[in-house]
Length: 377
Image (cartoon, rainbow, N blue to C red; front, side, top):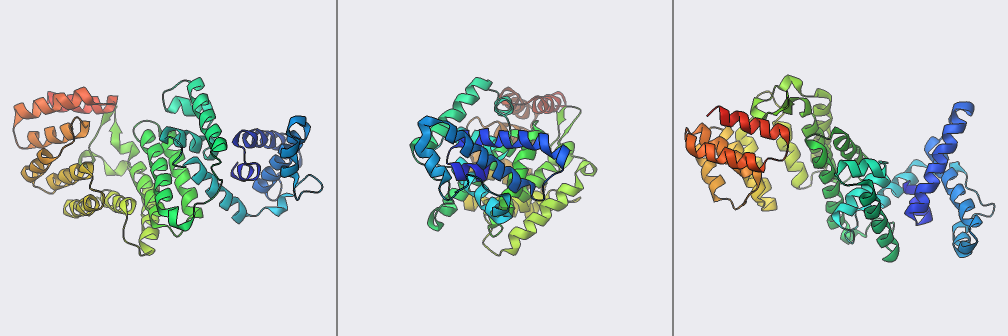
């Protein structure tokens, strides 16, 4: 898909060409065997089909001339494509999908469609909108790419840090959308993270994000048991996915080996790695959260630091920190405060805080956990 978009400069035409190429492969490969270079074969077939399609459209003669430039016979051999070319084109497509001129929801949808290969129906279902709404969202995004001539290119070096941060934010947003109950979206975000790590191997934050997602995902089976959300200290670590833990730690080590100052994703991955240990060093976790808070200025990070301070044995100090934060009706501030009050034996205040957290809870496992805490007061 990335190669076709880069070559054609038209996402709709690229999608149609890709679908034709896959249909031809489904017909021929079982009969004749797969080619030596399957991806290159699909790209070349898609390109050639697109050229044929445009040639047949008499109203697009000028576009035909441009598409066929440098192609005297009107075809392209798959051997002209190598892995590095395809990787470069995938990278260009990622930056196009996550261009700041597009709304964030459009960036997410385009990334899942063009790079994740999800259908419009699947994306709509993931974000709880109708298929027609998602079709319109994708169409508007593609039209804006055309109308504003957003380039299919990796940004210039001076723009790369900000643009890369936007790409990573989109991938992490997809992961978080699937973190609670949509494992397919979380898996897709991890796949995109692996792709980024492959084509941007010298960027520590890319490896940091991949590590963070793998380490969080390793706890999926331990996080919700019998439909009830379990906080990290109460989780059964034998239910952690050890393969994902090891893969996450390996990605974290690759990030640290690049010897750049630790960015937000690397720091979060380091915290997540500590939290997979059989005996968690909560003082170290709190110290890393303090570094992350200094870097980001986020009150949500400060809230997580407070939770770590409580686990390290200082719930009173943790409560003081929570009460100093300005987080309004952020649901986790109420559940964290409620838990700290419960531990300190302040039952009536804890009850009020748990009730407020329950009113704001967004998922059934969360509601069941809070209801269980309330019943135990």
